[in-house]
Image 1 (cartoon, rainbow, N blue to C red):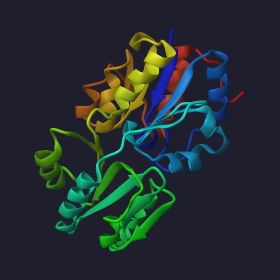
Image 2: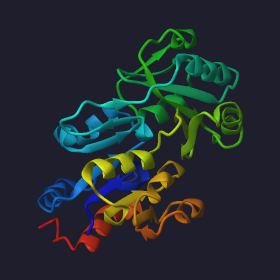
Image 3: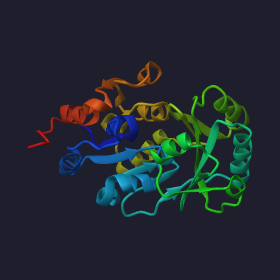
Image 4: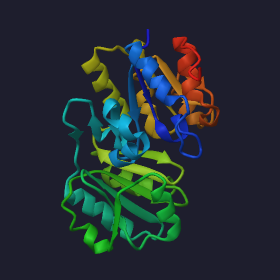
Length: 270
């Protein structure tokens, strides 16, 4: 019996227009009635999830920033912050690369350089809210604790930035590709999978009672925590090979359809 469901957002629960399924409110009601916990596991920061879920935010289990920020209803949020010396070292590297824009995700806000070109700004606004653009030098003066560094690289981070950062920080920090033009850097041990494992421990839920959905490399760590591990149909073969099952694409409402099928839920549109 499934007792915990955790799903990625972009490319998974959300359609390509970044919209929640119309059945989502009713789905939450039915899952609550059946005592099935629902967790959002996203690379997005908390303010962006607040904007998306509105009044339902406080009732959800939230794994934000790939697990660097976890919120459980009725409990104080848990953050895992990076040393400013490391943040500054990453800024130094990005400043030498014309196509890499760092986005510093703090507890209180989101910060990125105002020298970022329009195409970067549009990409950043697709996933982040309440952000502040500032002079590059001012990024070094930020005192807001940083829980994640998101890095936007228009020609893909795999070619140059990931190898550079991995060689310097790969042993001591988590580096994951989180989108076509995105990679994320967090403290060692921070991942969606480890966050799901902590939720399982808190809720006394086993992997056999857990269902997870994802479509990108930053979701792979969740697959090993659940028997019902689903990669989305449009996910790469590399991601799919880590999951036990395949769900219909996000454009086909794959998450809701799969949940309803496995849990034998009634028609949510009734």
